[in-house]
Length: 365
Ligand SMILES: Cc1ncc(COP(=O)(O)O)c(C=O)c1O
Image 1 (cartoon, rainbow, N blue to C red):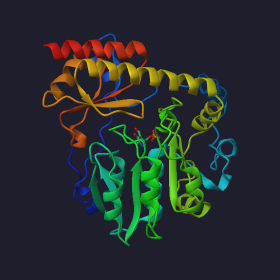
Image 2 (image 1 turned 180 degrees about the horizontal axis):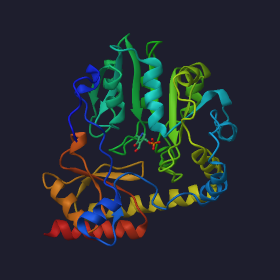
Image 3 (image 1 turned 90 degrees about the vertical axis):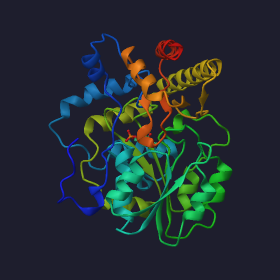
Image 4 (image 1 turned 60 degrees about the horizontal axis):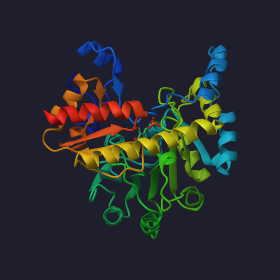
């Protein structure tokens, strides 16, 4: 990657661009492998929702038109499903974009943003790009330390980012922890709850945040990229008080969500059978992988999401390379300062078995 031009804004000169998971085609080409599986980006193992695919084909004939800037149909369907006002919703080009819109709407250069580490890297990257003063609070035992994050909040804190469940650990904050955190926060502090993996969580003590978002400065975001299998289309949404949404709308580009994404997401929302199958596949895969890791005496973080963080020790980068040679892409974690760890996405059972066989082969050498 070339170095950043010195004429770039001061805030971004020290930044490193986000490194996505390696695409299947790159590995196939480089290693001349005919079959490669990707368990590196927490995508849906089952592919896209079939109803979404059918809607996409129907929508393709209108590609000469600009998309509906307000996502009207999608907004109405989602508002009904979530039992919120349509004005409480905003749509983004992936939930990634909502992170940027929140920073752009609420944070002036020099204002404080609180993030955890390690967590989803975009919060810190984009907050720094905005010129925010970023306070980084370490996780404790691979979990968000909300007490320490609250202690880091000052009267100048504008945004606090919480990934729930967290990526890359898969751990989650409980209702009780979140309630304690929210109690008595300064009035100008907005909490950004990133629930990209919401649909995978089965725990009874996972917080249901929509009601809380109705009466305090709390932005909840979710996505069609994970459980709905539409990562390639880029559509996510945020739920918050209409005044907070209005601020984010003011800095949103008019046609940020393309028409195919809108059509597919509206159909995916109706595809309850696909969502249920996705949940079953993920639960079964998570159980299978956890049992295999126990058998192999590997340390891992119990996950509420569709991926698992495994602590392998200093050999982790070599394991990632050996898995690649066997056609299995997983995520090496040094970019998160979690050297010694790998993160594997829960796949289909066939993919999970292939990963475990390759891992056993690699660890036995
Ligand atoms: C915690 C978290 N938030 C947000 C995202 C971004 O998802 P989207 O595809 O909706 O932009 C991801 C993607 O991996 C994620 O892990």
